[in-house]
Length: 74
Image (cartoon, rainbow, N blue to C red; front, top):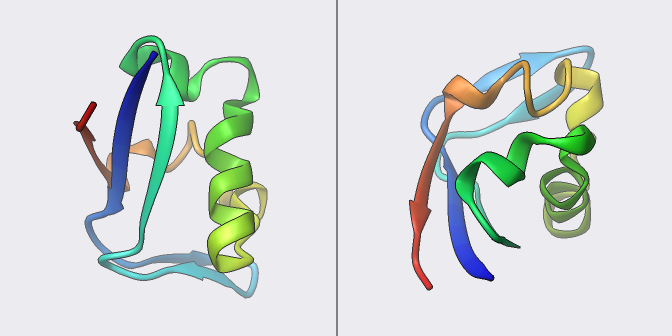
């Protein structure tokens, strides 16, 4: 397992929901491609737990992945 740091690169908003530049989460996955497979549940849960933001209101993590900077940190 590797640890990935996901940071929002620029503001994105829709449906009364917004991600602000600089928001960060940490998610464990085997590979970077696993972060956005199978419904992106770990990424969705991390944003909900830390910020109370439901990514599904923004179209889901797969639809807004271009707004994320992803770095492997562990």
